Length: 216
Image 1 (cartoon, rainbow, N blue to C red):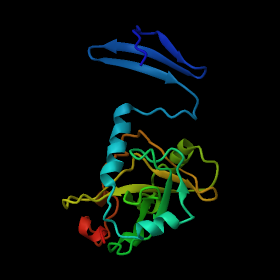
Image 2 (image 1 turned 90 degrees about the vertical axis):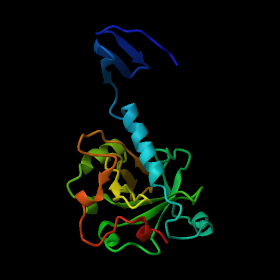
Image 3 (image 1 turned 180 degrees about the vertical axis):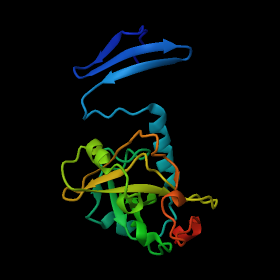
Image 4 (image 1 turned 60 degrees about the horizontal axis):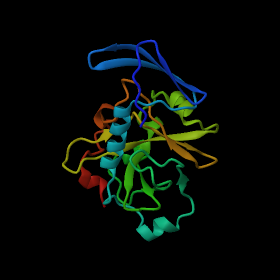
């Protein structure tokens, strides 16, 4: 790792398209500005780590659905070239119906997203536009770089200890409908939490936050 000492007002150029400038410095803190192409994602390190951890904690091997063998045979996998955060090594994911969906799950398009290369990795996802109609969809689409009609989903985390389910609004999944190519993007808006309580968004009086109802 290259380590440099810079003063306020000084810049660092990374390649031809990225400029990092020190705006101000203070005790234990420095403000920096970054100029880069819109196609270059810029994400705070701690937010990236939170999203990675949220994805990993949401993985539920016990989710009901097709067998491992059936998953590996599917030819309709979604292609995530960069994987998902926390699962960067897995690029092909299969969207599956739940064998025993919880009551109310249909209202938010609840499905299981399964890593085809490692079917024990299964995430609960729901349709973002059904769950949060006022979500900044245009921003998510712009961040994805996909130039086609797309569907959006978010990862749902149902803790095994019975705590309420949470939704990762900070990192939606965007999937092109024609190409079946997907990308998980990170939006840094203050109102889009990594662990937003599901009850704040969706309260049909039926969807349980119990892990037992989301499992086989």
